[in-house]
Image (cartoon, rainbow, N blue to C red; front, side, top):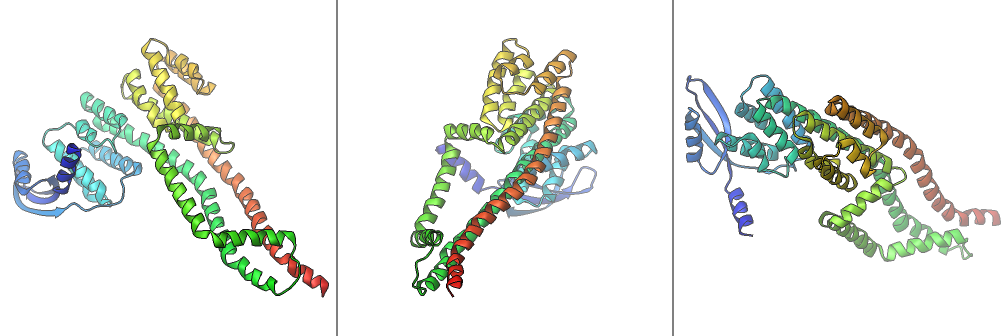
Length: 408
């Protein structure tokens, strides 16, 4: 608790300083620095041989939440600038200034300040595990040690872009049916709360016995009108409770992950996307020169599913004991035969990273095809379902009118 309080107090005193000055060649330079006070800014710049002419302080502003896509864009920009010969600190300064999200600017400025004081880039990234996982930091550390940082940043950017693309496609496949069902729920609520009660008032003046379908719909409407707020509280509170329980309970997350793979329509899509992420991650790590056993540390979590995380733990134990990767993967029974064959060929030919990369390409393409197929399949199914549901309500409410017309 004491540590958390100190961290909070430190974050509250953070300031972003915009400075201008001249370097050793009397050239005008400017930039930003995250520091506790002006003296720290002057001292840091003096060590860099910069004579400060102006310092302006402004409190760090908040911004929207930093997402994986923001980190992927930053990695691509940093890689591009370093390949163009721009020094690391200047690259950070340019990327931070050009980012539209103040939260990203704050993060990059903090990392830049750490690097300016002599911290390695990988160590600076490790201070922010919420945004830079072990895979990211390990690859940056390998790049620093081998002197190929810009190459590994480029590989990292490509890897993250592909993962974000897979996430986006899976979300887009789920978004359409969820959005349509939400709109349908709103329409049905409006019908039950206002439309059917209006019909009920009209029917009360008929003085005749109403058909059974009409009575059923009116009964449902009466229940919704009477208990609407209770229903809303139960649904809203239940959804919030389940979400919080899912976030805090590892057992519930495991149940959800296993259930997702067993779903009749979406299960195959989730399975393909998990395999694509697993093979892409291992390919990227191995190609960067990270030993296989260490690479497997980051692979399980990157797959995004407990089934593959557990399988990866088993694979890591067997590989550490001398078993080949393909044989260890086969023992888990979690991978299709094509992936196993690609891994075996890669091990025999000494091109494991390339073969796993090809497997990732294949499953990423399969995800694209599956998403398109799901969209084509779900659209008519949802239209038929909603049409049948709303049509049944409309027919039920117009039955008394039809009967009255027959009597007349």
